[in-house]
Length: 348
Image (cartoon, rainbow, N blue to C red):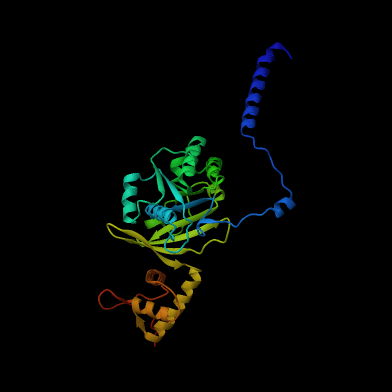
């Protein structure tokens, strides 16, 4: 080797040594298991922090548009878990401590909403609000210490975009973020992260799974639930991913709100909504054929009497849709603000 090439060669060796050193620091010994070993391993059944929604030691994402009551949902979930009570009065919870890492609202707003929800001050719910938490080893290590000290089994992060400096549309960046979050699940702590939906329209649009960012976000999580707010007080929750079981059927929840109180009312599952709509429409056509004209209240009563389960909100939505589409004629004006629904009158 001539002398002129020596400095370049020495720099090359130095670069290689640095790379090898970095690789050694992050190296994890590989353990290859045989099929027999995998088949003979005993794995306990998957447990849940919230039945069917938040698996134990997992990452769950709750997505929704702005003003879809995500924060109220998170606070209700946190207090339900901390007290061991049912979420929405429907889903069983595993009693445990909860840590909320809040980078969206601040303690003043959280306090107001907790008072509205009627939260008990003695519950083991803890907060890091506007703390500057980001998904680095140092912060995660500090939070894990808090989890150990306070018996925390669920960390709620509101929201994803506030706790990293990457590009949410980059699969590479999002992969790094969720790899960091896996440090919590490896220690038996579940993580629930909120993410915003793409802008849709009034009250969040028409579906619960149009989440912003890279598709790697969905690939990285164990469970995903989208929430959509419709007609002001009604929320539809749709689970589009559940790694450990079948996805839940979509379900509807009503927000009952006064200036001083806020609570959720579980309205039930939405099974096969299009098939259900066809059953409702067929039954309504028969009822209108028999009765000539009926208002919404009478239709609801007779539908339920006929064994067709539907609530007032859903019936109103379907009637509006069918009139708009022309499947039903414009209703007649009844007493007061009532509308009388009828079938088309055939020409003689």
